[in-house]
Length: 636
Image 1 (cartoon, rainbow, N blue to C red):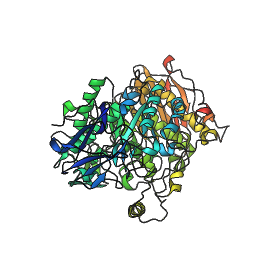
Image 2: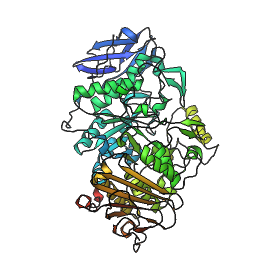
Image 3: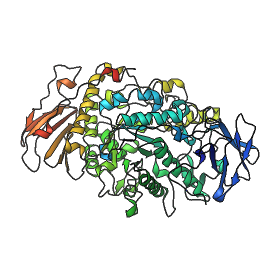
Image 4: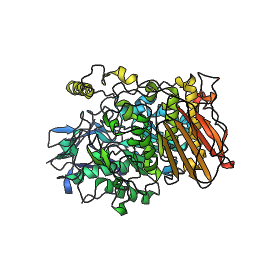
């Protein structure tokens, strides 16, 4: 039987015993499989093994050689487990020896998950060049900002060079236009040298449509389930073992051969599996096996909209063992609180009360009736630490799925941007920022692709319009102009008000890293109070004898409130006030009405759309605003 070895990749072509190559392909319905090596006359037949695998050991292919598999004597396809597609999804594969890279991160230790501050990046639009190498030049900037982990949107080979990444068709292949295998390995190596963890977004719920030849090799899909993308991935139907193996080996490869620190699994609610061991449970088991072998720590993070704590429960409690999940409900509640119209999925959210509930419980819906879903929805997440939830005020989905791809900077006031940043960064959860939000990037983040098949391109173009009731004003996802308009404008941080907003974010992040009450993600040491009439929310967090008090005014009017914090009478010192003059580049004479020191029972006045952070007045809370990020860190 073809056994899985967590210590090495066995699918595709690998070179564990140089100069010989090990060749393995899963093609259970094939009657013949032949390896065709380009620029060489030999065609090398593979030998049929158990459970649909075909195998060959040969010295007739070397790293750098291009190749395909010929099925049944006439059908020629790239390797389903290809590591590199130098000519794109329709070209031949190229053999790569991942072990040839010299790693210099032996002293790197993946930090604990509660210290992650995540920055989400799309490689193609983060820089002008849109490559791994270009991102390396921005790492000093991200480090100075206070980022501890970058999350890279999917990089598995997709058609052409313009794509969000969720249409990849070769799970193992690193996008050629980004820099391929060596480019990714070098990026991770440099990130670790600079103290930054790397999260990779992976898609295990569907394959992209163009260049997808997986079904020619085996039943990767099943009619048993339907997903938003068509047939479901075959995790539990006939011949499912090879499909499960494909994705398990893929995850292990990213961890082992590319030193990726964490994977973010896209839309795991679309992974349909009624097997005795769910695919996520098996993945958790295998990653645990790998960690025991290597001594390195890796995390599995998921996007899931089911509000089902089973995904977060450990294997010993019959859970799936995922380390953390994105919490869209925090985002939805926050957006309604700042004025988002209650349409679509926002119709389920009432703003401040739901935001307060999310601060305490993570999930907003944990058994209540959902108007949008038309059923009782969710379950309470008991005993789950704060670091098991990832929150944000915007991300690629929430921006890009809007008709005009508007970022928060295009929808809300400058004051509200500061308030939203504060709401996320003082939460008892892992915060995630979307690239450019820290300076209020004004370019939109559209949905974009570049399919070469005319019918498919038109279908996607029309489908995008249909999402918005046939509106012709929807940007064409196929054009280069749509893509180019999403690129970050790195000159903006040198201009106001972007420069000040960046300093504000940098200061907020530094406070989060500095104050024990903020960086200890204990959901139990938290109180939250809401005044819906005045649109005020007060968040009180503490750790041991260190306390913080976060006051948020979501209204467009000044509001006053009496400070009333339960427990010991504590004198409070103001550390940050978004209404202070230093955070008002367009109103240099602005002056917050909030005093520098407060006692319980004092009346405090909050400026419109403002965020204020007080801390317990003792040595631990002494804080100095960090020095500005040097311009050389972000100027190309």
